[in-house]
Structures are given as C-alpha cells and as structure tokens.
Amino acid sequence: MAHLIPLVARLPDAAVAWIDALPAQSERRHEVKAAPSGKVNWARTRQQGWPPSSFHTVVRERTPDSILTSVFGWVAEELVSIQQDATRVASDVDKSVRPELSAIRLAWESLQTTDGEFTQPDREDLGALRASGRPWLGLADVAEEIISKRAHVADVARELLLPATELRGALFHLGCLGEVLLALRGQGWGISNLRPIGIGSGPIFEAHNSRRTLDIWYEVAAAFRYYNSRSPYAQALEQLGAKGRPIGADIGIFESNERALLLECKYSAKSEYVLRNGYEQAVAYMTECHTALAVDVEGLVVGPHGVVNGEAEVATSVGRISLLAASGLEERVAKWASANLGRERHALDGRSLDRD
Image 1 (cartoon, rainbow, N blue to C red):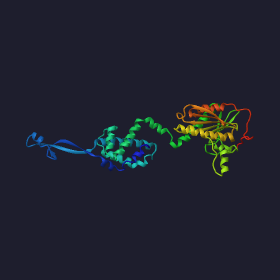
Image 2: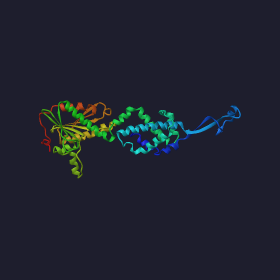
Image 3: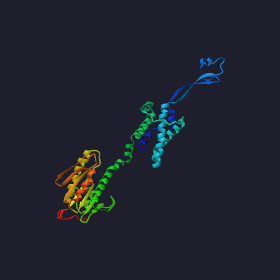
Image 4: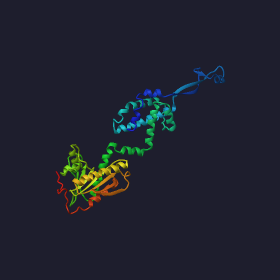
C-alpha cells in the first residue's frame, strides 16, 4: 500500500470527476418497434409490406469508452482489495488517501454494467489511457505500479523485509556485534550482559573462561574515561581550547591493557566508502588505542558481503589491520580470541588500566 500512496494522492478526490472524465462512444442498434420513433429506416420498413405493421428504427446510444472503463474497473478492484488487506495490518495506513480511494470506489460502483471480471490491462491499453490526458495519466501510473509489483513478488518481499534506510547502518553494527558474540560463544567463552546498549557507561558484555576475561564494547570512545585514560585526540582539543568527545571504533574487545581488537563497521553499497573511509578511521582509532589503552592492537574494517570481496591484511606500525566482509567476521574474532596471552604483563606509561 505504501508504494501506491504517492501515486493515488495525485488522483481526483470526487467520484464525479471520474464519471465526467469518461469520454463517450456512440453505438448504433437496430430495433423493430410497433410505432415510428427516432430515426426510421423506411426502406426496410416498406419491404415488410404497406401499410406497415412495424417500423425498423436505428437507435443511437452513448456509452463510456470501453477501454477506459475496463482499465478503470480493474484498477478500482485492485485498489479496493489492496486497501482492505493493508488496513487489516495497519488501520490508518490509507488515511492520507481515503478521499481519493473513496472517489474511485464510488465511481466504479456507478459505472458497473456487468458482473464479469475485468482483465489486467496490457501495454496498448495503458498507452490509450495515457493518451486520454488527465486524470487517466495518473491512473495509468497506478496500474503500472500494481502490475510491476505483481510481476516481481520477490522484489516486493525484499522491500518489505529490508529495514528503513536510516536504520540499516545501525542494524549492520548490531549484526556485527552478534557475530562477535557468536564467535566467542563458539570458542567456549561464557557471555554476561552487563547493561543495555546506550545505558550507563562501560562495556556492554563480558566474556570469560577459566583463565581470561574480555570486555566487549559498543562505541569504544567511552573506554578512555572508563579505564582512567585519556584520548590523544581529546588532549589535542584541550590544547586548542576546543570541545569534543573522544573518538573510537564501533566495537571493541579488550583484554586488560594487553590486547584490543577494534571493529569499524561500514554499511554501504559503495566500496570506496567502506574500504577507504573505513581504513582511515580504523587506523586513527588503532593509533588512539595503542597510545592510551592497549599494547597489542588489531583492527578490522567490516563491510557488507558483495561490497567487500575476499579478505586483505596489512601490517602497520600500530598493529595489523584487515579488510573483510561481515561473513568472515566470526572466524576472525574466533582466531583473535584463541591466541595465547603472553605471560609478561605490559603496562602503558608504567601503569595498568584501572576501571572506574
């Protein structure tokens, strides 16, 4: 229903507008009557004998154009059915176009002359509709949209299942977080939920086994304050007398002050945005983290499957950084988590990371 609303909104909101817009076509019919009326065919009447006992007449009737009426009836029936189905799910989904839909329904009911079913219009019918001007041009758009959606049911289902555009990036981030949790759980780590996302400060999950504990962050920028450390970027802003928040990756896994795995999640169909922008941000976040939070830092730039093809890994002065599709994330996280933590405990600037 939603995809039709902008098109239906351009149609007349009064039934009389449709009825008046229907051009009439003239039909001639021969009738035999007991008395002369209208146009009499005297030649045929005389052939039956004289004086005549009946009269052959020609009756001319004006009826609505059959093509326009047929297409209008088909669209009206389709819209009534679509409206009924849609309002069962969301009662107000048709609110903005109820006058237009009501006008179509009332005009359709007044024009019905047969109980037969209307057939789906073909390209020629729609061409005739467009050639008839307004409001038929708008009705042709509605008809084409209905036909297109009916022919591509799989595409319609995909549109309905896909989340709203403005939510897709955030949902991709959450999906990547889910892959992280699945990877750790698959390696035998116990997972504890510490707080809802966006509520309070600190990691949102904790992973633990018999020997080790991992802090799992969603929005890593808050980790600096939580671990009593300072972001180099925030320090630079202070020196300028400017205000700003620390910067950080979308997702982070920390093991004490020793190791950190940072995930920069990029959802886009544009590979340059995912790879170039993701790489630039990941390197910046890794530098911040290596300077103030962890000795051993690794970064992952994660993009949608199909936008990122394959996997690449390079070494930088602050740690390894990989570019990969979300489909390979679980394996990479599992590999990182299974690595042995060195016996020697390192500290940044001679200090360990203390939690608030």
